Image (cartoon, rainbow, N blue to C red; front, top):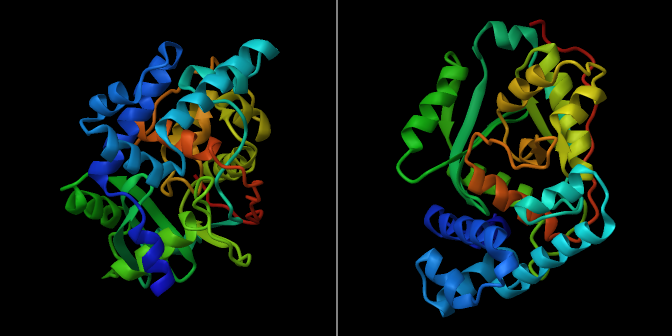
Length: 311
């Protein structure tokens, strides 16, 4: 557990993450002007020294290096002139399919019996942990991660109540150490360049979630497509062989109960615009930046769910 603690201690808290997310938005919006560090730091409300140190702690590189990365990505997009969503995505300061997910994720469906009983007999060990994207509530059953949501400071009670409403008859055991170990498992091995720590490959991280047959199809496709980089609702609809279902796909993506592991942050609009995100556009932009700054080859996969749930 000491190794897990050292990794989670390196994650930023919600206030620091808010500053980082704001600075990423500022850089993405002003990269053509090549702003100086003083201007970026001022927008984040910090001195140049403290902001530079905070950003480097989070990203593994300096704000100036990130600005160069965004500028280079945009220039490459212009040069290649390829009408793909990867190139259109330079509108949010990013291009390229790199993902920081140095994980293998196994998606399993909650059984119809567990869903019908509203969680009776299920023990959910839950807790709060810092992550690269601020504070998170993580819930785990004996079958795997069933919940991961990002929260703002002071919203812990509301977030926990929302989880309990999903599983009204389950037993809830508070376990912040367990939550921290899961956070370290998810993000500790997948830090930006200069921060990653070598470790042997671990077994798949299991995600066990309730959902309709259609939702499960969408989430499985999203894991597959998200492993390759940025995707769209249209791409997902095509992957599940329901090309006319983009609106329904959007609803399923929005219902994802496990942030990051089912990578709904990877979905952009067909135009390349950022689009919405349940936990805020700034967090989505930061997640895309985190993914793009990684030079680790993605190894995310999914295991087929043999039996889904009836709608």
